[in-house]
Length: 116
Image (tube, rainbow, N blue to C red; front, top):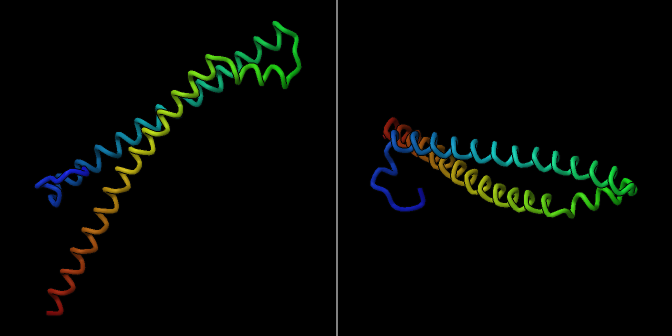
Protein backbone atom coordinates (compact mmCIF):
# COMPACT_ATOMS: atom_id res chain seq x y z
CA UNK A 1 0.00 0.00 0.00
CA UNK A 2 3.06 2.26 0.08
CA UNK A 3 3.04 2.94 -3.66
CA UNK A 4 0.70 5.46 -5.24
CA UNK A 5 -2.66 4.04 -6.17
CA UNK A 6 -5.58 5.96 -7.71
CA UNK A 7 -7.99 4.05 -5.45
CA UNK A 8 -6.17 4.90 -2.22
CA UNK A 9 -9.08 7.05 -0.97
CA UNK A 10 -11.80 4.63 -2.10
CA UNK A 11 -13.70 3.11 0.85
CA UNK A 12 -14.01 -0.32 -0.75
CA UNK A 13 -10.32 -0.41 -1.63
CA UNK A 14 -9.29 0.61 1.88
CA UNK A 15 -11.58 -1.92 3.53
CA UNK A 16 -10.36 -4.75 1.30
CA UNK A 17 -6.72 -3.75 1.92
CA UNK A 18 -7.40 -3.57 5.66
CA UNK A 19 -8.91 -7.05 5.56
CA UNK A 20 -6.02 -8.38 3.50
CA UNK A 21 -3.37 -6.92 5.81
CA UNK A 22 -5.22 -8.18 8.91
CA UNK A 23 -5.31 -11.69 7.44
CA UNK A 24 -1.63 -11.49 6.51
CA UNK A 25 -0.78 -10.38 10.05
CA UNK A 26 -2.85 -13.20 11.54
CA UNK A 27 -1.20 -15.79 9.32
CA UNK A 28 2.31 -14.56 10.07
CA UNK A 29 1.55 -14.42 13.81
CA UNK A 30 0.22 -17.99 13.69
CA UNK A 31 3.36 -19.15 11.87
CA UNK A 32 5.56 -17.40 14.45
CA UNK A 33 3.65 -18.98 17.35
CA UNK A 34 3.90 -22.40 15.72
CA UNK A 35 7.67 -22.03 15.37
CA UNK A 36 7.92 -21.00 19.02
CA UNK A 37 6.08 -24.17 20.05
CA UNK A 38 8.33 -26.28 17.82
CA UNK A 39 11.38 -24.64 19.38
CA UNK A 40 10.21 -25.60 22.87
CA UNK A 41 9.55 -29.19 21.77
CA UNK A 42 12.97 -29.47 20.13
CA UNK A 43 14.66 -28.04 23.20
CA UNK A 44 12.85 -30.52 25.45
CA UNK A 45 13.67 -33.44 23.14
CA UNK A 46 17.35 -32.52 22.91
CA UNK A 47 17.52 -31.90 26.65
CA UNK A 48 16.19 -35.37 27.35
CA UNK A 49 18.57 -36.93 24.83
CA UNK A 50 21.61 -35.25 26.36
CA UNK A 51 20.44 -35.86 29.92
CA UNK A 52 19.89 -39.59 29.38
CA UNK A 53 22.65 -40.44 26.93
CA UNK A 54 25.54 -38.54 28.41
CA UNK A 55 24.51 -38.44 32.08
CA UNK A 56 25.37 -34.75 32.37
CA UNK A 57 23.98 -32.20 34.79
CA UNK A 58 20.74 -30.33 34.20
CA UNK A 59 22.47 -27.09 33.26
CA UNK A 60 24.90 -28.85 30.90
CA UNK A 61 22.05 -30.67 29.18
CA UNK A 62 20.11 -27.41 28.73
CA UNK A 63 23.19 -25.64 27.37
CA UNK A 64 23.96 -28.45 24.93
CA UNK A 65 20.34 -28.52 23.77
CA UNK A 66 20.40 -24.76 23.11
CA UNK A 67 23.65 -24.95 21.15
CA UNK A 68 22.61 -27.92 19.01
CA UNK A 69 22.35 -27.28 15.25
CA UNK A 70 18.68 -28.33 15.10
CA UNK A 71 17.87 -25.71 17.74
CA UNK A 72 19.92 -23.07 15.92
CA UNK A 73 18.08 -23.75 12.63
CA UNK A 74 14.67 -23.27 14.22
CA UNK A 75 15.99 -20.13 15.91
CA UNK A 76 16.87 -18.56 12.54
CA UNK A 77 13.42 -19.49 11.21
CA UNK A 78 11.86 -17.79 14.23
CA UNK A 79 13.89 -14.64 13.58
CA UNK A 80 12.66 -14.53 9.98
CA UNK A 81 9.06 -15.14 11.06
CA UNK A 82 9.35 -12.39 13.67
CA UNK A 83 10.52 -9.90 11.04
CA UNK A 84 7.66 -10.92 8.74
CA UNK A 85 5.16 -10.57 11.58
CA UNK A 86 6.45 -7.12 12.48
CA UNK A 87 6.23 -6.02 8.85
CA UNK A 88 2.67 -7.33 8.52
CA UNK A 89 1.69 -5.60 11.76
CA UNK A 90 3.19 -2.32 10.57
CA UNK A 91 1.18 -2.54 7.33
CA UNK A 92 -1.99 -3.29 9.28
CA UNK A 93 -1.46 -0.46 11.77
CA UNK A 94 -0.68 1.96 8.93
CA UNK A 95 -4.00 1.19 7.28
CA UNK A 96 -5.87 1.45 10.58
CA UNK A 97 -4.33 4.87 11.15
CA UNK A 98 -5.28 5.93 7.62
CA UNK A 99 -8.88 4.83 8.24
CA UNK A 100 -8.99 6.79 11.49
CA UNK A 101 -7.60 9.89 9.80
CA UNK A 102 -10.12 9.62 6.96
CA UNK A 103 -12.97 9.25 9.44
CA UNK A 104 -11.72 12.26 11.39
CA UNK A 105 -11.36 14.29 8.20
CA UNK A 106 -14.87 13.30 7.13
CA UNK A 107 -16.38 14.31 10.47
CA UNK A 108 -14.49 17.62 10.34
CA UNK A 109 -15.91 18.35 6.88
CA UNK A 110 -19.42 17.54 8.13
CA UNK A 111 -18.99 19.92 11.06
CA UNK A 112 -17.73 22.66 8.73
CA UNK A 113 -20.73 22.14 6.45
CA UNK A 114 -23.09 22.49 9.42
CA UNK A 115 -21.41 25.69 10.54
CA UNK A 116 -21.08 27.20 7.31
